Image (tube, rainbow, N blue to C red; front, side, top):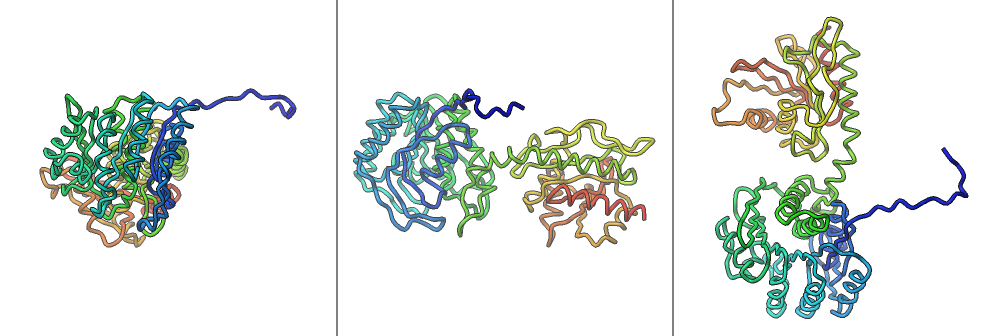
Length: 454
């Protein structure tokens, strides 16, 4: 390496699309400007901002608010637009009619896509704006690329109260009739089994549904959603793709929330945490594979082979798990992997791991082993918490892994280490082991091997 420190180096700039947020601050970091900038950065956009109000805020609520003069808000917007090539903007808390009018004037003349999050009604149902400010929103909504009200805000803007998918679609159509290019009526406040968000444009509609997360930390979810859409638009996504990706992002950010403050917060860095853990997850699976090969774990390899699976910390799909491409097999001189380690290489064991993570999200690694009376006796001798299921008892209309998860992890007093699958329907019986990390999984598999062979 050239160590000549006197040599002048050429810059290697990181070109990013620029997005703008015009909103209030949140000293707790869960919502407002802070959430917007974190979300934009997580989506690869450079976040710029214009602060409309300063709040003393935490995960329990807002203690005080100071609204900035409209001229100060305008000066911030002008400064950003004067120097940056802003590709998309979003608005959040605008607080007063003069601020709403000022922001509308500035953004309407900027010729860029604008996502309007009409912050009008608190989660408690309290109105956050006076009637004059609510009326001022009509012009801002009319020029919006997308408006993202929750059910209460949609009712304020349109007079139509969303209570289900159809009425949410009607409220969205009313917002489009007001002039918005599109409306996303958010379903977090609607009493449905899952969370249903409805996107309406002039000529189509789409429904995005996710399971509802119990006792969820949702403060700032609306800010995060609109910021994610704006960032996606800034990076060049079309509207429907930008919305769908943002909805998925927020669903994940709520499920894997940040454990901070009293009530927790939406995890704006959830995708970055996954990316950062990719190498560690690959290395973890490789470590377990190497240990099984070195120990000649033939006694634990079933006829269908063994796979070792590692999930990213906030994995939601098989593509976000690492496994052996082809599995581990017994050969004449021991155990060998039939392929390398890659993302998306497992289906069955990965889906089993997901069923376990529904009940204990800390679980990240799993593998399948041979199962017979000797393995059952070894699990019992090791004193591990275990669970069993018999596929002959599986309901005809059930998903095997969902049913297995409910009948084992869902019914257990403590997280099982081993799940004993009695097979049926022509399927081989199996013992599946789970662990929060690769080192623990390796220790458990080798302990089971010793107990079976001893």
